[in-house]
Length: 153
Image: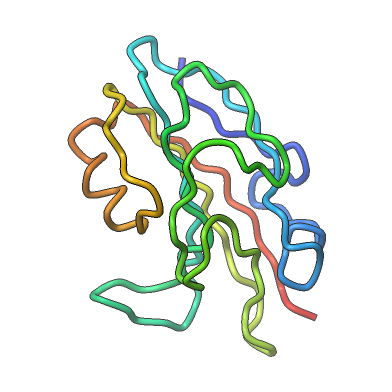
């Protein structure tokens, strides 16, 4: 079995519905989680746009969502969830900021990446993606991705 992250509102590499973007309701999309490794103690979810024309602190792109301290037995993440710990995204907001690429910049890809960790880490609140990933890196059992795209009107 391989860890799976499945969107219930867009297909892998398909278009993210407007509702879940900065041009819509700007709410986080729902996901199903399948085939979690047996030894998983916690999960982390990060959404990153590698196509954003930004360079910040030695990395490219824009982080839209950081969600962590998700119990390992979790099978779904609800739409517009307020469950779990929400980190600070690159818009300097807590939780989710939906896709909204610059006008005339074309289609951007949004990588929703789920990490299964072998340990329930003692997380602080309001962490950045960099801090969460740095703390998680030695504990990753498996990783899954669901990629969506969006082109601004």
